[in-house]
Image 1: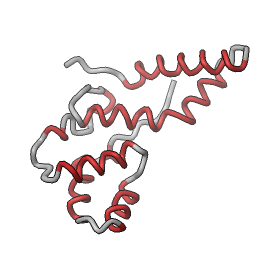
Image 2: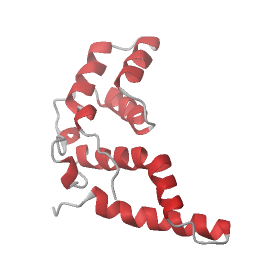
Image 3: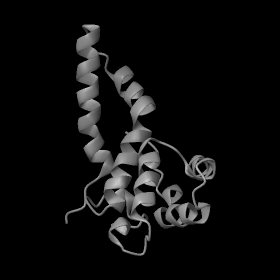
Length: 130
């Protein structure tokens, strides 16, 4: 599998956003649209790429510190709980939010913590740069 670059691939998303927003405004918004995309979409964009990485779908070179394909491993003993946790991760929730959700629903918090520790989302943060 050839590695991809989060930063290189994001350029297409940024260009698409810039074009759409400029069309809406009736003029070229230039760097203003780029700055808006980075502020409004970067975090979710990286989170989606990270999920592809841990699922083993795409190897993102900037996420090399993250466990590639860890979700293919069978040591995650509760696939339904894993699926629910991933739903929350994809929605942008952080570890503490997910632990509180598990407590509120009477779920086995240790199982949730085990999943979160396996995923290790905090090691996979990327800052936006041009």
